[in-house]
Image (tube, rainbow, N blue to C red; front, side, top):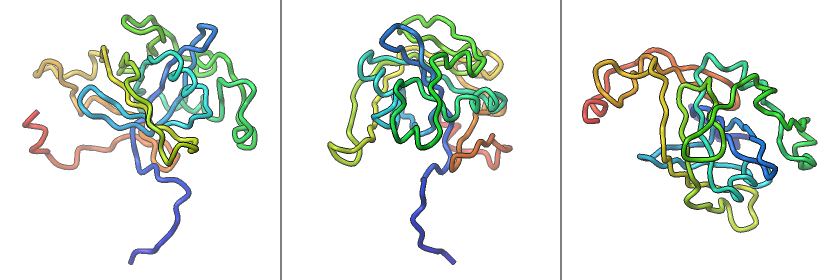
Length: 202
């Protein structure tokens, strides 16, 4: 039997993305998020307009989308309830957020130089995607505090450990274990449930 409810959140389960951007003083900001979906070499990010990441993306028009593995959950959780924005927006103050200017240091992660964009990549992440902003769309009307940001990936880096030994430029899905956020809780992937006919097409 189904029950009608009004859920507080609708994060049904998507990979965590660590977005690295540049602050106005040239220092890097690092923010975890999970409202992202992918199509070819594009990604659509769902972000709040009041955060530092949105501010940086609007100004700089570039970023790196770093995808952590499930083994990195402790590092990602260190960034929970932190913000690179000072002063802290009131709604984040009410949620207990802390201003942290050095997000890489807080997470104990290592920045490495990117090749096509200015923000650094996260060395420990198995997938690192250098990207540029193509469009910014309001979500929920002009006065909404939400935005969908259209990102185009310009260069991709994958840890050799997760690549297929048989098919060039393919990820071995038995070796790739992304960190998943489902209803604000961290999860990893389980075992493969069933062979996919679609996978054979690609």
